[in-house]
Image (cartoon, rainbow, N blue to C red; front, side, top):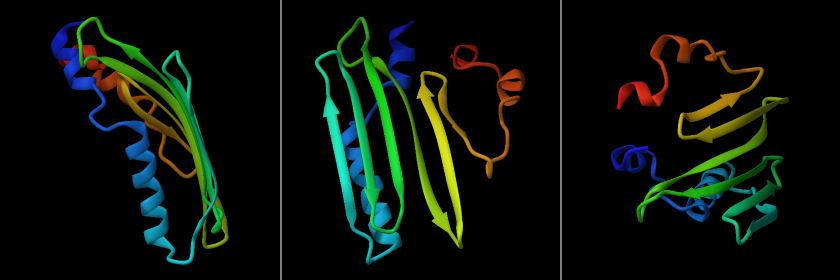
Length: 127
């Protein structure tokens, strides 16, 4: 991979910040919602796992690992997870992966974009 590509996919916000923003968004959506459970751990190999649940039924989990690049401030995260929430009596669940090729959500209520890569190609094709 080139240094330019690493810069394009380099995470600009750390995982704690992303989780905090998610929790703030949850609290803003339902003023009475509280965090019922939150667990977060980072291992020496760069992997992490996080889980949270709120009092209004939102649940999320994710795990991933950081792969350092050949030069400082470069590299990539490979992450996966899921979240679920209830809206008007229906529970929606999204499972997702995120890597150097982007964010890939899947859920019964989401459109199927699996064919998109066939039409536009991968990240490498646009660098």
